[in-house]
Image (cartoon, one colour):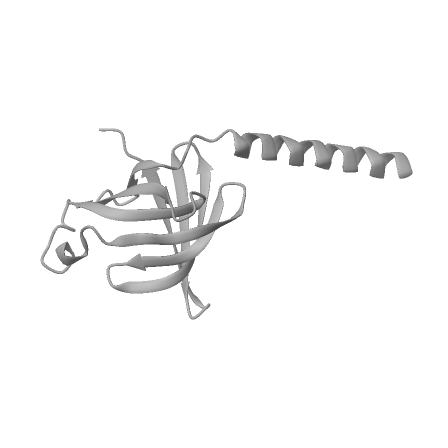
Length: 133
């Protein structure tokens, strides 16, 4: 039984190390990203002390480019989110006039997951994909 436990622990540690190596290999999150609905694009860049993440709304289309949303062009979506782990940041998210505490996770070279929670109970998740014209 001890050999089985040792083997399982070794496998888990190996998988964990592999996951960390893969996380460190992701491309920089800097660039242009498009939300899953393809109606808005954001410029994501490192900001603040160089480790924080910022994202600015730079384009609206496909129905989102209306009088209600256009005032938010050039506004921050991700506001100086601080790193809390490999490819993970935590900070304020601002979505069309609503603010929430959020977590930003780069899950691959070309995908970022945003999870924002208002009052800690009303949560929403968005997917951003690297935009390639």
